Length: 390
Ligand SMILES: C[S@@+](CC[C@H](N)C(=O)[O-])C[C@H]1O[C@@H](n2cnc3c(N)ncnc32)[C@H](O)[C@@H]1O
Ligand code: SF4
Picture 1: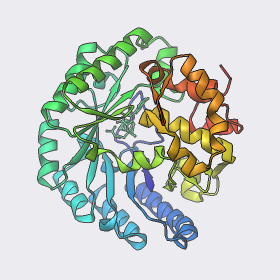
Picture 2: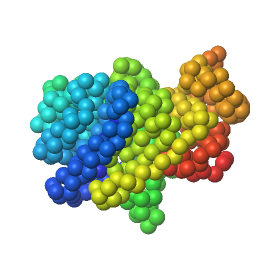
Picture 3: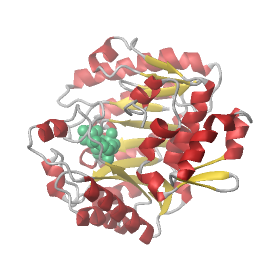
Picture 4: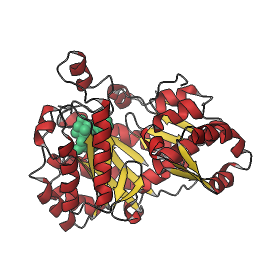
């Protein structure tokens, strides 16, 4: 399950997630009420099937920005539906600047056992240029408090490819997190989206995009550094000191598992259907009846599963696919896979296919060049990929 909290202290120039700033106490409580209404209506549809909730992820926006009073209200709502302490993985996404000792203690109390911090870069000047507070000096204390509150499963996000970024700062960010013994590190490539402040600044020549060759060099630099530090590449963008730190939410998603998302802009995948709530906060608070629904045919579900397996887990196993979709599933992807082999995107082994380095760098091509989805809306909305075939 996923729950979206769409509030931030300030909007980072690069960020495309649905979040607003400057909201009042009252507005945030109205949102929490709307969330309760949505959970109550939608959960009653699924609860009869007694689904196993293996992971709850409260993301955003910035969930840590909610006040203690709001967190208590949210926790009270959630406990009406689920036994939070029984959920094996319970993650909250936090911004370092709004994560207090009191909130950490409360998270532990309600059953949170994994925290994900947005660090992005330890070079404060890059962050301040993006309208974001630098956290270089506060991070060690924050991680110490997190651990002393009893939460040791910690992820930190690094974002690379931002304007003005030097290769050294990406490697320094990796080194800083490794030195602080962060057990799971996510390394995200910056993607430019039209609705961001940074896009507007680039159009008006107020910010220069980093050239592609530098982005690739920074990416390689970060990955090589993590591998040198003996981190394991758990998924394309996710590294851990052991596979025990694999995020269950990610694994479930990329294994084609079901996900129920609540809140403005939240996405779900249930019964072979991709669903997305409205991205308009006012509409959501009034009544969330604007749900985008994209049903996938059996063939598209196979393509989706292979695509996600390859891009996010770097490989997929034939046997797993046959177990899940039957023997005929091979025919759906055979031609595309052959083409990927010829073009050096994957290596086929006895019972699995694995993405090559070239494949990893060009994974966005998979659904537009090798596996052509019947339902192009799925690419457009769910994967935010232009639908033209390549
Ligand atoms: C939704 S944010 C939540 C984290 C928290 N609000 C914070 O920033 O501290 C999750 C992550 O998305 C990543 N992100 C934001 N904008 C991005 C973009 N344009 N391209 C790639 N990743 C992005 C950042 O690394 C961020 O930490
Ligand atoms: S990166 Fe995090 S803090 Fe910045 S705008 Fe996005 S969600 Fe908010």
